[in-house]
Amino acid sequence: MRALSVRISKAMLRSFLEDLVDPLDSYRHEPKPGSLRVRMDITNKCNLLCKMCFYPGTVGQPKFDMEPVLFRKIVEQVFCYAETVSLACQYEPLMSRHFDEILDIVAEGKCPRVGFVTNGTLLTRRRCERLVENPRIESIAVSIDGATKETYERIRINARWEKLVENLETLAAVKAERGSLRPYVQLNMVLMKSTLGELPQLVDFAKRIGAVVIEAIRYLPMTSGLDEAVEDWEAAMPILMEAKRRAKECGIYLMIPVKDERLAVHDLPPYETGTPDLDTGTYSPFCEAPWRAVQIYPDGSLHPCGYYGQAFGNLREQDFLEIWNSRPYLALRRSLARLKLHPTCAACNPHGYDNIERKRHINIL
Image (cartoon, rainbow, N blue to C red):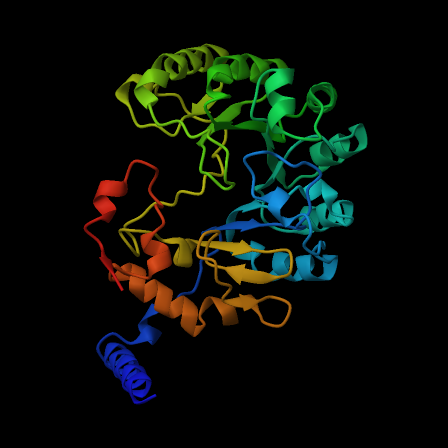
């Protein structure tokens, strides 16, 4: 008991001295309009059980949707600072029973660059029409993970290839009928051992359904027993180079998570993509998330990012700026600005998958 007391008082003393030398209040921050990247989910439900996803492990947990009254508060208090907003990151937004009402609230808001990630299986013609008519919906990213029926249905359990194709062709048709380029369509593909070979075919498919961006995402193990991580990227280089070549010919912007001059085709996206990487250097050389980004869960809990694992407040009971300048936020900003990283931040890699060596020289709290 005495040893515990000594440890606690040492920690308190250290905290006191740190606050004295570098006051937390100096890390208060007022976000500017158009400065935040807002990522959120309006439900914690999905209709698929994809093999590489964490979701199958959560099936038995309580499911719920964000209520419109909470969403409206977020629009009023958070969207006014937003550069971009993603209404879905981890779950399927069209599973929300409030999806149509949320689209109406989005249309009333001031953020002009709103999008979401979807598996595309629940799109209907009516929903496609509503998306095209909404002046705030800029883009949708469709997670597909395969360019053939066999691969797609093997990975995306409960999905049907023919239905996905029909839905995306319907969206393209509605856009053509209305003479609209929006919402821009992006295809997301997780690069796994069993899917990487279909990346060039996915470029052809993207052209067919009018997609303008493809984001190839490196596979990160979330479930045990799935040996899908690509480790030999040199062996995969011919496939990646062919995909880049086709994408350039088709006018499609292809993002590949491998830094290599052979893939450096200098094309530009037709719109700024919603990638999670933030420019660094203004506030911290490591990560600027607690200055420039937020992650909001369907229950209203607000996180500095999707990886920190700790909510700093809840928008049901608190106002946004109250949480934004709360003690946990100030402490996190100080740790990142001084490169004295919390263990969770030290385990993260905000600058891309190939930046591990640089992180080894950063101090850890």
